[in-house]
Length: 324
Ligand SMILES: NC(=O)c1ccc[n+]([C@@H]2O[C@H](COP(=O)([O-])OP(=O)(O)OC[C@H]3O[C@@H](n4cnc5c(N)ncnc54)[C@H](O)[C@@H]3O)[C@@H](O)[C@H]2O)c1
Image 1 (cartoon, protein in one colour):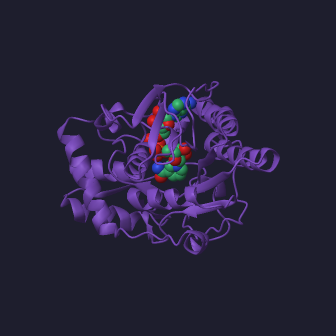
Image 2 (image 1 turned 60 degrees about the vertical axis):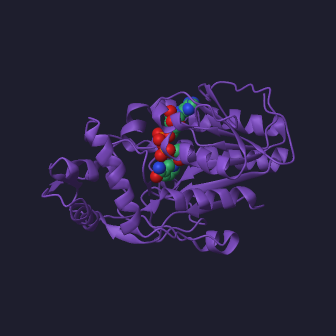
Image 3 (image 1 turned 180 degrees about the vertical axis):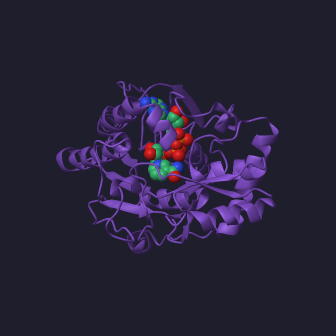
């Protein structure tokens, strides 16, 4: 059991075996925290945390956080990152996604209240839906279709934000909300359906890069270490309203595909397919709030982040992982 000490805070990270949860865990350990990672592996991978085996500052609990969470330990911070996060995952697990965004958020807020811990929830730019305002500021309420196929994820996160603010206002829990925009980097899964692993996997195996629509829709991509730095800073702040963290550098999906072909040296071609329902046409964060409040802005150049990510996926392809 972890007990309080002045020197090393104790953090709970739900979704610790996932892409972002595992990078956050590494950062917290590097900052001198002790970390209790919680995950049920629904979309996570033990490989993301196996380097922590034997680390006395890290403990892992296999648990579904949509069920009640009991921990005997003292806790200083709760980071709620558990949730299927890619369209493929939340379309396969819509009910689990709604449950972890609602019941999981309620349970983790209850844990934070009980332990008098700080709380930070991983929300998403999907709260803005297919936005009618561009770029998206935190003050924008969004344009979400609650009954479309993506509604399970978008509405779960919107509910989670509302629940988080209710615990802050009613119980005085010291809460933070980060709205994460598209993030990429090592430890993503090749077949998670997001555009970064999909294109890199296709390029590395000489398959055509599948573009949905005409490729004119835009996205912005934040490298994982930049994102985690923004989240760590937010966790130290006294700000309770949502904060966008993401990279404002916008590119079209077609430009992104061409960049992947160039950086992998692949001979793959672009292939165009029909656009899925409710796919957002534009997406770019306004990060004025993060800059002003946290002194944060992304530092990793796209060319550097994408090369590191390609190297990671090269290893996964060589190890026999299947490509989208
Ligand atoms: N990666 C992004 O670009 C992005 C963008 C916006 C928001 N987010 C949010 O960040 C968080 C992490 O996303 P990610 O990209 O690392 O996804 P991921 O799928 O790699 O990680 C999510 C982790 O949560 C775990 N999990 C899911 N439901 C659980 C439950 N009920 N109990 C315990 N564990 C559970 C999964 O097994 C997985 O390890 C999510 O909340 C996601 O909504 C991510």
